[in-house]
Each structure stands twice: as C-alpha cells, then as structure tokens.
Amino acid sequence: MTDTPFNSWQSVQEEVLARIHSRQWKPGDLIPNEADLAQEFGCARATVNRALQNLADEGLLDRRRKAGTRVATHPVRKATMYIPVIRQEIADKGHEYGYELICSERVLPPTEVSNIMEFGRRARAQHIVCIHTADGRPYVIEDRWLNPKWVSAKEISIFNEISPNEWLVTHVPFTEGEIMFSAMSAGKTEAGLLSCKEGEALFVIDRTTRNKQEAITSVRLIFAPDYQIETVL
Image 1: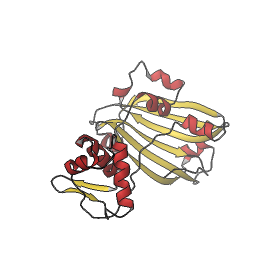
Image 2: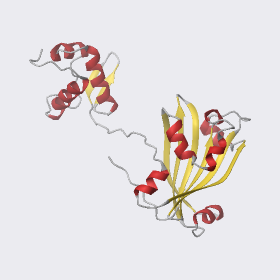
Image 3: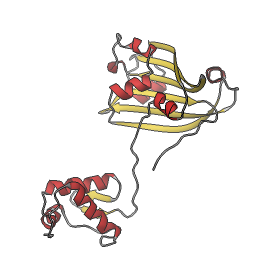
Image 4: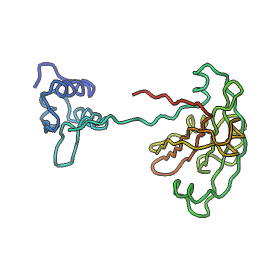
C-alpha cells in the first residue's frame, strides 16, 4: 500500500497515467489487476475500475475479459460527438443570425432514409427543410428527417420559430450516432437556397443520432461555398 491513499478515481487515473508516461508500464505490458491496485492505492476496487475504464475509453488501455488490462500498443485518441447549435455557431463568429422554415410535412421517407433510420416501409417521418443565415446571407441548408416519436403533432409548429437543430439539441438527448463528411456540386435547388452558382462545390455533413439504438433523426447539412469547419483535438 502506498503511504498516501488515493481517495478518488481521478487520482488513481493520474497515477496510472504517470506510470504509462514514465514507461514504468510500457506499451503492451499487462498491468496489475484491479484487486492488487486497490490494495496498493488504499482505495476501493470500484474506484480503480472507473479509472481504468475511463482510460480504456480514451484508447490508452486495452481491457479484455479474463485476459486482463494492458497498456495500448497503439493508443488511439477517441473523439466525442458534439452537435453545435447553428444559431450559436453563427453568433460566435460575430454575425447576425437568421432562420427560415422552407417546408415541414409528415411523409414516407425515401428508402435510403428509411434504411438509415431503420423505419418500416410504411412508417412516416417528419421532413423539415430550413435555411440558416448569417448577416442575411445563406449559411447552411438543414434538410432533416425526424422520427415523429420525439415530437408530437402539436409541437411541430415550434419549428416556425426555432430550428429543429436547436430544439433537438436542447430537448432530445442522444446516446449514439454516425457522422459523415463529403462534398457535392450545387444543383438547381441548392443554388437557389444558398444564392450560389450551379456546380459550385459545397461542404456536406450527414448525421444520424439515436437514443438507445432507436433513431431520433437523420439530417443533411449543406453549407454555402467557402464554409470552413473548425475542430479541437
């Protein structure tokens, strides 16, 4: 047991990280089991478990049932999926935000969307198209399919005043999802909504979110020309 007990999972995590960074525990090494570490650190086994699991979630440890915990041979920094509120994103850039609802209707989605959201063939979804603007200029088209389970028919009118992006971020929590980045050439519809020329290159984000494996929404965000995405590692 160490002279000073570790009273929190964060302090255990810091000690484990120190041993990894100092190469006391090298990549591929099998580290002591939870019971031995709990005894050494003078804390509960559950405290050790949480610290090790957090480091495993971050890609620094490789935990396998009955095989123990090893220092990851090739550590991978895992990303956290964060969905920005477009209104706030525009305001943070110093621009005046604007919003316009183009259409909102409950219809049968295309087969591709039904497959992504795992809907039945005859299941209807709310299709919403809107435009976000910055200083009066088109910023991004929000083309969204929404599972009607998450918003009642009475609530649909809320999208006349607030974007589905902002409403969902603040009202419907998600537990998992997928995101894809791509590019496309502006067609007639996109050129009209984004005030650009047909054929111009546009940045696209396709995102699907779920709550415990049940689809919430699938959205395509099509940004005006010259949009730049920023991220923090």
